Image (cartoon, rainbow, N blue to C red; front, side):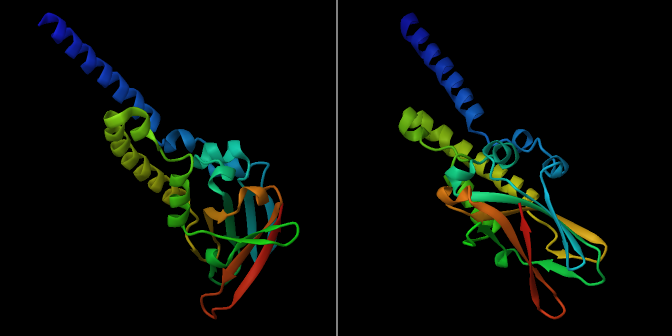
Length: 215
């Protein structure tokens, strides 16, 4: 009886340790991944263009370490490049960022369109920002831990991405907007990206204008 109790106690302790270790490895941590601030990203890295009574400051996060530290992804693995933008409106009219009409360009002029924030979140979850495979690796215990922590991971990732996405889309006079816009770019094309085409919408006339920022 004592032997069986000792075995039982050992299994409980082992299960607790395993669960704790897995839980620790499973969590997407915006606090750690987001240790960089927008000012840090812009400092010494941005491309700057003045056009349409606006100033555009743009940083392309195709560097793996930079993207990992800010949004927890490897651009090549996720086939997605985050781009940080800050748009300051010094004109006398409202402007709106039309992210769906914006794109990244290769040196040869090949365009790659933007993603909605929900599409970007889904791509991140399918790549290295999501915990996968524990059910196979650790059996039933792993499946339980994986299910609970994947839900937590996904919620944290969604909150972090929404927080860091570009806003507000509608920029008043003497105001600015800033944040991330995500673009789908296959890994083999990412090194050739050298420009962002930002589409602006005039809410009063519905006219669109494009501004190209080269890196």
